[in-house]
View 1 (cartoon, rainbow, N blue to C red):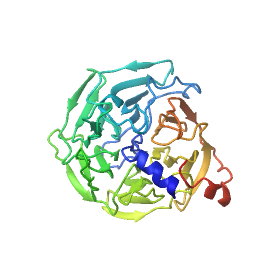
View 2 (cartoon, rainbow, N blue to C red):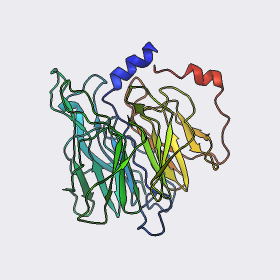
View 3 (cartoon, rainbow, N blue to C red):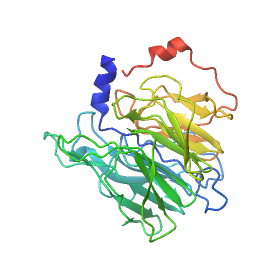
Length: 363
């Protein structure tokens, strides 16, 4: 327990920033959102590493490109303006040759990226007012922007109703949903843990944010969408305890239900990542297994394993059935490598209870 408390203290400003997922089968009455990049053939098995090693960044695939923005560049204790990135890159997944540097934006970590109608969106995030060597002064933002690949510039949207970071986001039809997170106000002010999420219709230029209730308060979680449902996976609760919980919001009925907990393992579900691909939900947590929600949605299956187990990383969709894991850290160092994953058709043997127990605490 001491080890758990110690690492949680180190990682408290971290978020998952998991790649935000997009819906696999959009609602029939709404405009469809892309579920994977427009890639006509498999993604190359060997992709170049990210230009900089970061945790708690945003990543998403859209129209054959992998986009990555921001994140934390420093060691776990180095939360300062110099260590929060505002860099923005993309990788052409058709050839997988090299990363392209795009227009940078206000630095941020703990903010998701989502894609809609060929554009890339970012919402909220954490930044630092303090410089290296100064007392930490961290704050969440209300920033909402979208990037148009045709013009190559960022443009502002209606800001979030309140500052938020360490949250995740997903698009269903034309609507983006912001789930989880917390609000940091700088200095030694205690964080606020909201019990409300937000929704914005990206197809309506005059739309305003609308709130919806959450039956939980937690951050560093991952979200993924399937049809009209949003799966809210793992994270850390307002008691600063990592959790394996899965909560499901049906946006068509506005009703919440419980899903199966993630399997036990190192760090539980803290700073995990999730994505929808080919009508299934996938997740990756610090234990390193690639998990898939079973067809009956009563349990999780192991369908692969990362070469470098990591947290505060991103799992994104590539050419079906491929997925890409990128960024994050392995408990000791940043992992800029990209791993192309092809889920097994038949689930792999589950890890034994003794092995799970042995790996259930933070390093």
